[in-house]
Amino acid sequence: MNVGLDEERALILREMERRRSVVDGQRYEAWQPAAALARSSRVRDAAVLLNRAGVFPRAGDRVLEVGCGKRGWLPDLLAFGVRATDLAAVDLDEVSVAQAREMLPAADLRTGDASALPFADASFRIVVASTIFTSILQAEMRVSVARDIVRVLQAGGALLW
Image (cartoon, rainbow, N blue to C red):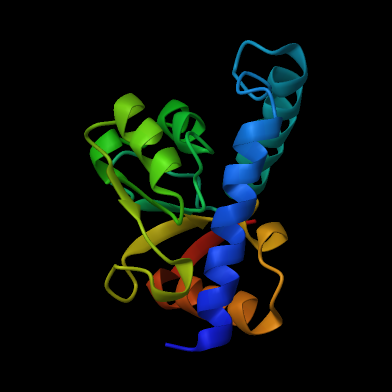
């Protein structure tokens, strides 16, 4: 492993822990008016774009969220019609993944490094990478994550970013 990338992973995890200690844990909950407004806008825009591109997710489509946090797009993907058993997600932070597993025990939710996704090539029709790139400081790590996302995305699939 590259020492610089190991340092980047540690830096990201420290920042996640710091944010947990200073940001109100309920700030992004679904019942918060600001969170609900932001979510409704992004979900509407995503639905329009995915439909226009002919890749709106259906039951049976495998969908991956990279950097899911404790919830991310997972509930929205369920609302689109994706089955929980067709959902997968990866996050570097095991605390967030554990919280997501409580909500979606049937989904394939894993703690892991997005630069080495634990999935086969062309495994997913849709990959969601909503906020992960804003958390990565090193260009080398961003490139590595982007390459692995492309690797697991099916030809003709869609990256929702």
